[in-house]
Image 1 (cartoon, helix red, strand yellow):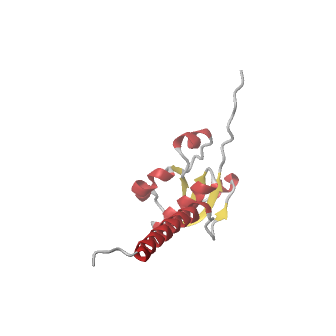
Image 2 (cartoon, one colour):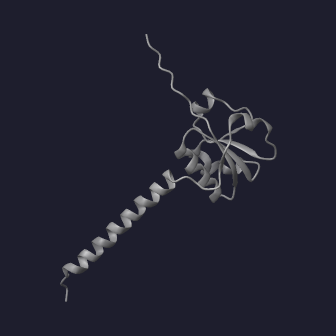
Length: 130
């Protein structure tokens, strides 16, 4: 009574390690594995879209350098508390990179939106030399 056997400690440690590894794998999956069934859209195709909300998930400083006039500017970090501002359930996302695309698509699908496409607009940095 009262003695702890080493195999019980190791079983608890193995369980803890398995839980930590599972959480790391889940986070890597959410962030880096592309979402199936979402098509890529070019910027020229955004002009003739109707009855679909165009949501710009880029940060405000990226969205102002390469603006899309008809888009609702809603950075990814604000989606959780402001997703009700999106007027239609069908959406097209504007993102700046693959990670924002994956996280944005999964988050909006969780809230019941149907992501019809993604337009990835990368801003090329300008280096000013003296």
